[in-house]
Image (cartoon, rainbow, N blue to C red; front, side):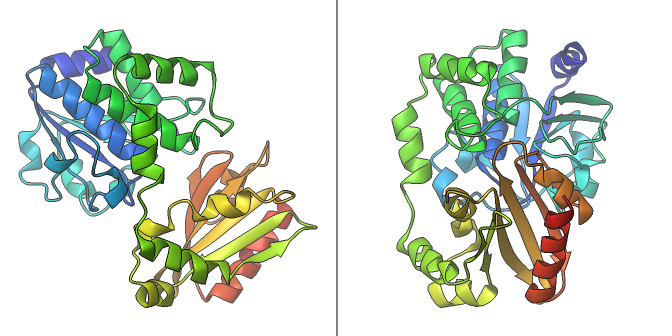
Length: 316
């Protein structure tokens, strides 16, 4: 399949690149690395996302070129859909993206059933960034410093700083290759993990008040409400990393973060340790993801949602 993707890249002239809503480091780093590769090849390429780029990723090379309005999608030869297990994950531009003649999906989610004719899927890979590194090596594409920085950021964030079980020998070899190519681990880590505004700390203080733990079940949860955001002046992007705080507690094997997205709408993020498969829990609510990291959206009041989720956890 890689050879067919390479052929599509070689024959195409205009490329669209997009990724999922609620952008993370893997999605953005992968998009910008691919943008750099295509531009260096003399191709015309555009990154278009529904959502704005979170503040702590705006330092990534090329981030200033990202657009949020897709004009004349039919003018593109190829669309890359990165880090998405289904087309709808790109948000309100999904219909426009589907108008592009050739779609290529590069993704590592175990819940991806394959929605593109051309695809590079590997649920064993740590990140979409790792898969792009594999593709670029196969193409013998020049790995510029900017490309290395973006791919390193992609891999770093989706492995939780190389702590998650998805971190394999290929992951570390890729990271070493990227550092050799000019990626600065300290500088990238400082920008991503040590540049939070005061509003994030104020939001965390409120959210910690919602902490609930069940040591016997090995489960802990917190909730972020619209009221918390209004009170602190924080935004949804400032919840990044909250779930890892409770997963770090000894004896807690499943961490859950409920984030309010509407009057009676919540996004549930799940993280687990070891071989506990939270993707199966998310799938119960039409979500998906990975064995140790998954998410879904649930409607209802928070109390009833928690009860339903805990029932699913017990069954799992």
